Length: 221
Image (cartoon, rainbow, N blue to C red; front, side):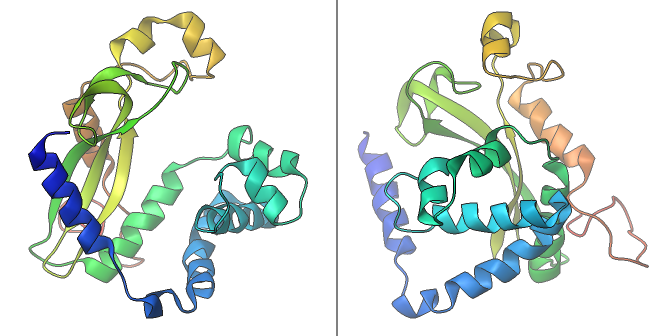
């Protein structure tokens, strides 16, 4: 890894250190945070699975997969695996709720939107969109997935509010691999700039009830 990336990594790790007091009451706060998102999925069982899975992700379980998390809650793995990997639910309302909360908490008249791609290393060939491409986390070209993120930044704080997985041309043309990995037919190749514009066109949230947005719908624009 190049020295400049090593220095940036060291700085990020230093910023990530937090006081132990921050974690007091974490599970209760997490449950309160998740509740409005879980409600948008529909059904009490989905809400329960959502809380169980997210709490498992921040637990001390060695392998953060559905099977290990289900066993941690003394449950059969099939129900949680089905919820995560096979059940049909729409992710868009979750992003709407997230941007609404960010707008309420961090919204400022001079806030700005920031778009940025980020790669995450992967092994193998079956993670959707994976290929050899530039991976900023590694500081080199390597096997990875890339996503484009939309963030909101104000003088108060910053937060991510939306994301799109970059779907390369090679994947878009490979019918066999698409079918094997369950890629929807509607998913097509788009440049990263097009993904940014798509997120922007969607708006980043819903207006508060009774409010009249001045430009676009959304609490951040």
